[in-house]
Length: 393
Ligand SMILES: [Zn+2]
Image (cartoon, rainbow, N blue to C red; front, side, top):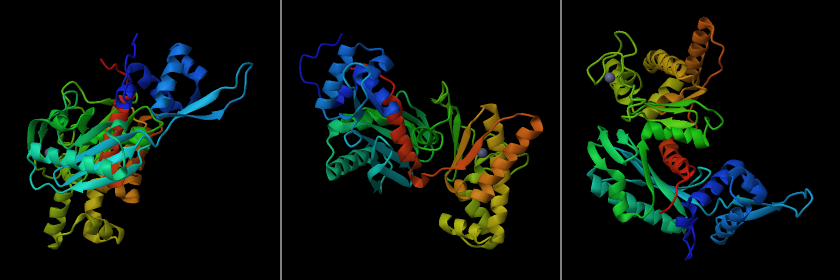
């Protein structure tokens, strides 16, 4: 039994096993009476009364509507004050570093882009902490009301230890990100590979919310896959699950920068698309120009999309059926093309299922979060950890 001998700060309180269990139930159910909480958590009525009193004292939980009496006193429903708890989110990609504050529903309260003059880890991470502190001050949010900070990084990450094992994008190897951040930031910090984080964004706030198995295929800067099975992120014992972007998929396909042919990456990596468009037309176009050219049915741009569509459709069908997916979300550039990519992949998948006699409904969608997917994923990472109760020593 935990005996509270001194006032506990809200940050410490919400990380105690009992309080986080109660908050998890409230997050999932919206609002509950104390007797419902007793039933749903398995705790005693006295414990629930005490925890709710403490959470109310900290302003984290509020009393709301009064329910109907079933004989005794009318039950008062309590709910989380969504204006009191927040999450810090960080996206770290070579040319795209952003720090943000989000609420528990995944709404971005404020965000700021960092323009790093160097990618040297300690310098960049110090900039991250300074930016987060500035945002908190700007929004008038006390550090006490930040549940934690999630970091989405491009590369292979040892998420349990918070170490970036290898990031070609950032040029990092064995960088202890959470340890460096924790020297200047006294908050729980969680880190995950960007594709994995994006899968969590869809699970907590997006189109995979009501599903059990989902997959996020991250495109544009490369090809990464985040996998959710039974509502749990699958990273694998060596943090390699989903690192399928360089497994050849198309026989004698496009040459890849890894030296092989037919990986998914040369079909979805915008740098390769840009180079191929340049080879054919002599014009160097950026991402937005490419999208516009496809919309205007430019011959060469459409030809490139028509090469990518079957490669992505193969990837969706192979990986989706292998893992019995409910929904596959395509992020980045290719998720923008509803007709040319999303519908194509959906139809291809449906045909494969029909021909193999598998009766199964699957949704293939483009992400609705655009550039913010990684940030929402970083926030989802914090929610994910928060809803897994643990004790504060
Ligand atoms: Zn490759």
